[in-house]
Length: 193
Length: 193
Image 1 (cartoon, rainbow over the protein chains, first blue to last red):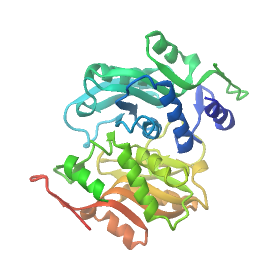
Image 2 (cartoon, rainbow over the protein chains, first blue to last red):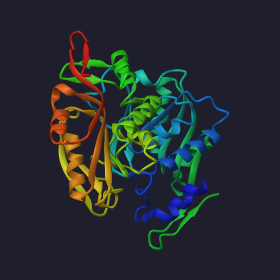
Image 3 (cartoon, rainbow over the protein chains, first blue to last red):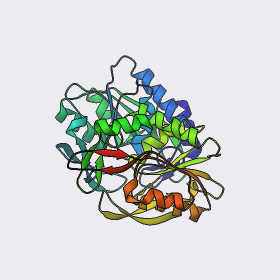
Image 4 (cartoon, rainbow over the protein chains, first blue to last red):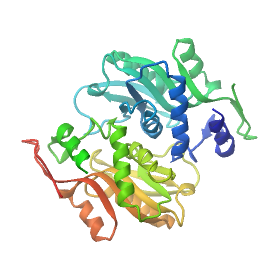
C-alpha cells in the first residue's frame, strides 16, 4: 500500500534492535484517515471472504480494527486482553505469548462469550514480526472452533519471518507494507513488493 | 443518548462493587456502529468548539476515540499508555493514577511530541467513575499547555461523583449515559436525565 509505505518513509524511525517506530501515525498518535484507507485495502483483498468478526489484541490493534470494521459491514470487533481485570469474568480462552516490544511474557485472553464456533474471523494487528502475538490469537480461534478467514497487518517486518511462516501454513495474510530490511545507522528502509 | 441507555439495559450486567459490565458492546467486544453514533452525538454537542486533537487512554478508549474522530474532521487521536515500552522513547509527560478496575496504580504516559501547547483537546473515554484516569489526562494536557475543550464519556457512573466534580470545575463534559444508581441484587439500573 503506497500511502502506508510513504508514511513509514516520512515518519518512521529505525532504532537499534529491529525496532521501527511509527508512533507518529500508527500506535501512539493515530491517523484515522490512514486507518480508513487501510480498512478499505483489506476489504478489497478479502472481498471473497465472508467475515463475521474481527479479532485483534490490545492496545495498538484496537483503533485500526475498529475503523477497519466499518469496511466489513460493521462486524463486531473483539480485542484480546493482555491482563486479567475485574471486568473479565466467566470462562475465557487464554494463551501466553512473548512480547518483543515489552520483552516479557503476557497472557492473551478472550471471554468465551465473544469467540464462538462458526465465527469467520479476520485477525488485524498493527505489526507482524516473529508472529508470536498472531499465533496466540490463532490458537484462541482454534480453541473456540472459529475459522481464521484472513489476517490483515499494517506493517510486517518481513526479515523476522513470522509472515512467511503464516503464508506457508496456508493463511491468507495481507500485510499492507512489508519491510524487507532496515538500517538503524542510515535510517534506510527497503520494502518487499 | 437513548440508544446507549437501551444497550446498557439490554446487555449491561451489574456486579457487586459498583461494577457495570458492558463488555458485550463497549470494552471487549466493540459495536462500531454504536461507536459511530456516539461520535456523532459528541460532534453535535461540541459543534461550537474547534477540536484539533482527541486524547484517550489505552485500551478501551482507543476504539471509541478512533471511530469518533471521523466526526471531527479526522483529527489525530493520541492514546496515553499505561506502561513503559521500547516503543516509547524521548521526552514524556507522565503522571500516576489509581485504577478502579485493575485495583492498582499505573503510570499515564504521553510522548511530548504528540501533545503540544495550543492543541485544543477533546478527551474521550469509555467510563467515568471517580475521575482519576480523566484527571490524569487533564494533568498531562496542563503540563503540555494544551487546552481541554471538552470531555466525551460513554458511561458515567454518576453516583461516584467524578463527573459532577469535573462539571463544577467548569469542564464541558458530555456523558452519553449517566447511571444514577444500579443494584447488583436486582440488576436494576436508573439513568439520570
